[in-house]
Amino acid sequence: MTERVEKFRQLLQKELGLPVGPKDPILAEYLAQEEFREEMAAEHQRLLAAFEEALVKNQAIWSDQAKNLANQSLNAALGAAREKVAAFSEEGGRRQAGMVRAAVEEGVQRLEKALGQSRHVILRNPLLLCQGLERGQPAAPGDNLIGMGCVFGLSLGFA
Image 1 (cartoon, helix red, strand yellow):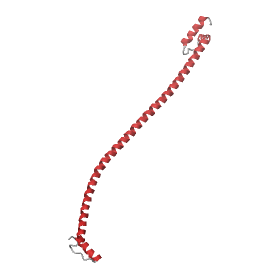
Image 2 (cartoon, rainbow, N blue to C red):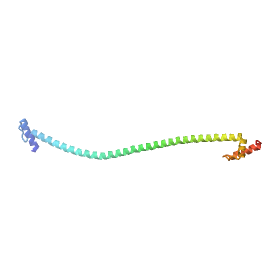
Image 3 (cartoon, one colour):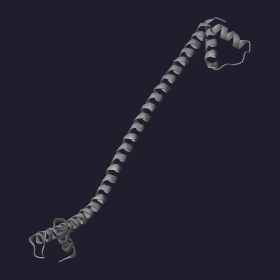
């Protein structure tokens, strides 16, 4: 008998007052249960060790998968951000181009209006221009037109 079995036998005699011999069926049952518990504990330890090993392997796999998913998410977010920046830049460029086009068109219209008014003045008042040139006033831009106006005016007999 083992020490545990002997303690159990003495406990039964002391607590319950039952005489228990070394070949008593209660001790045989107790021994069978003890052996079963020890076998189960050993099996549980083996299963626990196998589970821990599988868990370590899975943790490495899960870690790699989590990293891959995080990288995919970050790459997708980065791609979306790049697309948005490109779209905003393109939209801003179009807006700026539209503003520049409008300003240029407005400037061209002003220049055309000023040119039209200048032509109007030159064609309506050729004698005044010829008189200004005859007095020795400094030449102004468009002297060729002014000179032509004076020649035109003089040839028509306005001078």
